[in-house]
Amino acid sequence: MTLSLYDTLTRGKRAFAPRDPKRVTMYVCGPTVYNYAHIGNFRPVVVFDLLFRVLRDLYGNEAVLYAANVTDVDDKINRKATEEGVPIGVISDRYLAAYNADAAALGALQPTFQPRVTETMDAIIAFIGDLVTEGAAYAAEGHVLFDTQAFPDYGKLSGRPMDEMIAGARVDVAPYKRHPADFVLWKPSKADEPVWESAFGPGRPGWHIECTAMIEQALGLPIDIHGGGIDLVFPHHENELAQGVCAGHGHEYADVWMHNGFLNMGDEKMSKSLGNVALAHDLLKQYPGEAIRWALLAGHYRQPLEWTGDLIEQAKSALDRLYRVLDDSARFLDGVPTGARASGGEHTGATQAFDAVLGALQDDLNTPTAFAGLFQLADHLRAAVMGKDVAGVERSRALLLEAGQLMGFLHADAGTWFQGGADDDLKAKVEALIAARLAARTARDWPEADRIRGELSALNVEVMDGPTGATWRIKEQA
RNA sequence: GGCCCGAUGGCGGAGUGGUGACGCAGCGGACUGCAAAUCCGUGCACCCGAGUUCGAUUCUCGGUCGGGCCUCCA
Image (cartoon, helix red, strand yellow):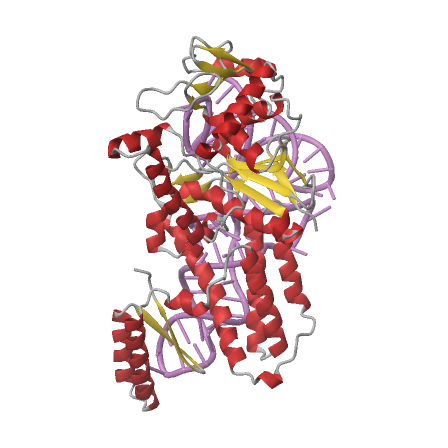
């Protein structure tokens, strides 16, 4: 099996071939840390985390270098810092910590590098200097601007020929620009804004150059994979590409450009400028991170995703099914004497399902099909439990766990999944009630048994009577 | 105005030139004291029109509808 990925630049899927299989590089545009990030910000986080995991599986954990940047120089951060009367670092540190915590709750591995603009300033200034030297940038009224005329392929990534762009332009063009499409590399800071010294005068960097410099500093150019949200294709990535190849550091920038589709909130686009933000931070108080992760991967990453409560509920139910069979099979295995266990024969059906998961993931991250493979694995496991096939249970259980965990799921134990919302106090209470109910059932005192079940239900607990005793779970997470 | 996507059953969502993935929900049955879970069974889905083809949901063209980008929102 080989990994194939869709490349925005060439508009097609093709086999992924890293320049150096021992050093696979990926860069993804990260957040501007000026507030809690909304759920849409986490779609690329989860999508590219999945790709990170697939790459690690393919090339080895140490061979994959993944950099996800943080923008910590920005107007919005400045504004917030001014409001609170603190340095910008206080703001960015605070929200970076929250962002990383939310990402971890969604099952995202920590990227290899998390470069920050404030820590890359020397490289940014040097990069601008190189562009000027190469004749691809010019100074004007305190700014340094990138000369888009210097890059004949400008517009190729986003499929926007320059002349058409100008014809359709609806934005005012700054008078000091030689060409309307030229963009800022360095600009003067206004009063109260943070300022850095440079050969071009005091000021601060433009947005696009930051990423290019961070890539070069963290990973070195060119890189294998560059990712981000589809809204970044133009102008951000188009500009990055232009800078990257014009600085005289080589003619390549990124081998594969990957972009995830937008997350929509009902009918309205999710944007911080509209009021309908759903912060991941708040969502995580209502739903397990794993369910949110599942929901974010429910559709193919390049398709738009409609974010609704129903979607999360369905994701939770789907995971319930997986955890249930995991739980039942664990219980089954507990009842089998260790001596009676055989180390597994070939369980071809389960193996095929496992391969189907890997194959789907390697086919441009086809998560819906990968999910189907997970359910197939679950079916095999269920059948083995019902058939009391110990070797089969062990085998398909291990495969389900391995496949699920590769995707960043099924790391919790089933007890935590179903009973995670319960504190020790509640657990003790529930166990006592279940014991009482068992006594009533043994005495065939059905009204009493049902009364206790009602009492449990009032505690938001659901009991399930099985052949080996009763199990329970929290019905709804509070 | 320019550029680019998408349109699949009640919902979500893959995929394929010819046997209707998968999940959620629903319905019938089994099991259960009753439930829940589980198991078995169950769904006349591929936006409209034309074309190509022995055959199109899948390819081509046109249309309609929806969405995105063109503004330092992933």
